[in-house]
Amino acid sequence: MANPKRRTTGQISGENVVITVAWMYYQDGMNQKDIADRLGISRATVVNYLQEARERGYIRITLNAPAFTTHRVSLALCQKFGLQGAYVVPDEGCDAEARFMRVVHGAADWLPTLLQPGDRLGLAWGRTVYEMAELVEEQQIDDLTVLQLVGSMATPYGFTAEACSTRLAQRLGARCLNLHAPAVISSVTLARELRAEPIIAAQLEQLETVNKFLFSVGTCDAESHIVVSGLASLDDLAWHQAQGAIGVLCGRFIDAEGRAIAGPMSERMIGVPIDRLVGLDMGILITPGVDKLAATQAAIRGGYVTHLVAGLGVAEALLAV
Image 1: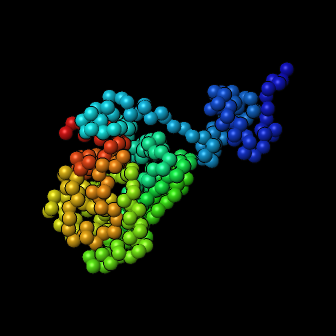
Image 2: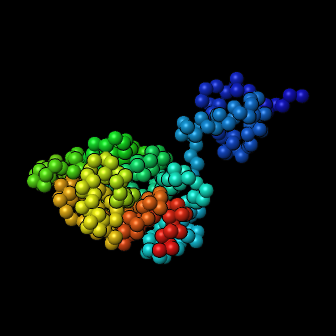
Image 3: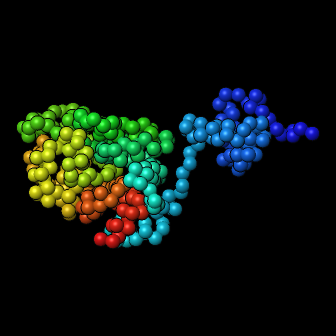
């Protein structure tokens, strides 16, 4: 006798079959073989439909944050550095790129749980921030504003400051306030005049209202984004290194205590003064690799960090110093 529950995909058309397979697998708890038998299709087809469901955004797969924020290493980081929270991602056996993507994905999963309606989230720039924005699940957080903290730059990369803020705002259904000025001006006088322009002055004034801050720190070497993007020359880098620069935060060089290093370049920058980013409701730092260890320590000492996202290797290195 034929199975009365058996259906064929001829009876389920278009995207309905994708939704049906996804429901049977994730909601009904059926395995792939049982779904294939029920619908009269191959197991490989079931796998393809499940992949299509994920690509179309029908499925959201997340792990609960407490799994990453309440284990021993996370709690030890909070205790040692006075953090409010630490999200530590397992990274054993991963190469550098896999470690990077795990940490970025963890940050994308955690970020929405840290935001509330009415927040004004300041955003730094760089590959880490951009990739995280790409991975955040599309959702709506009411009355959320995302603000670009550093002016624009011409770079060979897609992760400019305005691309980072615009993309994250789109993913979270937020209002986006971009900064319509170059990040670095050719002269101190011109930078001063540009800051006084009414439209730029109004945008800079908005940055004073930021209550949460998301960022990654940069390194102080010739491969740093601040150099490769053209914001700083090798001469600028050498000058700041001689002054004790250990990292880069929102386009500004910082020393080992997290203090901004004042100099000719800083006077030509258009963006938030980084001392405005100390003592906010939240400072969420994403550190995807041990190459940023010294810069991360500096950011923590400087008071910019309340929440940290990192891989286990970075976390254990921080605890060891």
